[in-house]
Length: 190
Image (cartoon, rainbow, N blue to C red; front, side, top):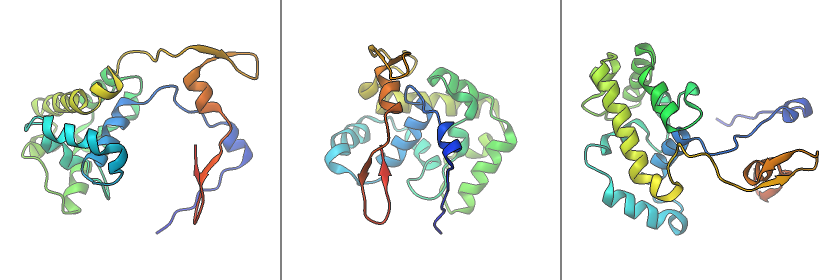
């Protein structure tokens, strides 16, 4: 079922983009890419390295982030913006009901869950701490070699913007007028 979202000019005027990648989302989306073979020209080397180097005790984390259908929403907590430390901190304080609900949704979708999913669904502190540890290990193996430490601030040169303020190069790129990069059935924007 396709969903169509309409934005008014006022809606578009209030959109703000992050000035730096969000580590929790980057990790989740990379888990999706790791479990597919799409984009081999771009991701093939990365995928091969991560599949080879990912520790065995971290691999069950991927079951919480299947590349299709639903993923465990608690892996991308809203309170976790601001870096990997903030994200895993928010993960550690996820309410039991949220853990249980997301895991039940995955189970109902026929997903095979990690053996530590039952205590995690019960809100067991050690199981939640284990989840945070394996998440950090995943990030360290899959993303840190490519993007660097997630807690480091973006170091991009400052540049003037059209309104006379100064922005980093990253925020200037994000604020640039959107241009279509493909067409045919829909539009992709950058």
